[in-house]
Length: 389
Image 1 (cartoon, one colour):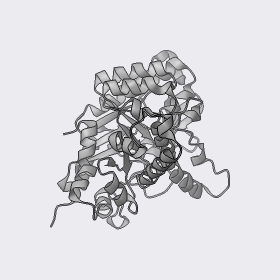
Image 2 (image 1 turned 90 degrees about the vertical axis):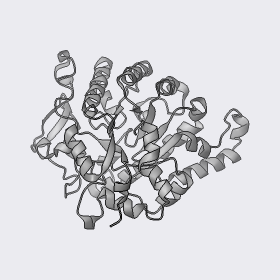
Image 3 (image 1 turned 30 degrees about the vertical axis):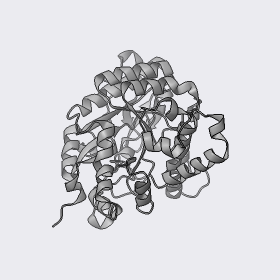
């Protein structure tokens, strides 16, 4: 029998999440903050929930749905039902071995996918302390095997000076990537295209850290609030699909804000957003660039948007089939593989008939893609980006 793709390649999964343990903040943040520190309590229905004071900020079961046979809002109730592979590094490595996945890149849950959740704390000193505590926790977690577990630092983006300081601190520890809020304007901050953020880009470039723009970093109220009354599931599916496109706005802001030109060594990744839309948005940006006089307005920008993307940006996929081959053919060095484990719509182990097993999906989705490009997608490009052997 021919070897599978996952047997041929040291597969790098560039988007997974760690379900944070209940004590991640209470054991690492100064006791003077008391119950203002994020902590876990029981909801009226018995579910474990994350709270700040009496404000609910998260549901660990909602982040930990891989293998669960029901759909949102019927989440796993809490920690007693969450598999160890979602919370413990040794168990994660065992799970990876079983799935023939060599490395995981690790993202958060509780603080939000761009750290915006920490703003709910309302106290700048505590916000920064919680971000630093989370980063310390994640690095400790990944230290079980820093070759195979790649932690992505969170950042206090609401304070640029503090953000630069945390980038420098975490880079010195050994972090190789950071996650930046993809929609900072949702929190009253400047748009990504504004020069306000230049010190952040400069610090990341100088430290050799790539920037991840994970979907869902902005306002997610539309995901859970069915204002039109179409039904929770229908609204959840609608909002979940549309949130992918927020990273199209993010990509356009980064390129049309001149960030790629000013920081040519900075690598950036559109995470959990899919890739089928990337050829279209780049073709649209190239077209508008040529027809709107951008070259005259900014003669210093010496590349087209698609060329800036090709030089220093990436996108990732985990469920697509229809538009995947075209995206890989056009941008073979810029497309990365992920599973989104263990989130509700992740590509996770399941019945073979369901086609949700990562290895089975990859065999189907990458059928017809050249062996060279498959090697880049499953390993080579991510290995170069994250410094993995």
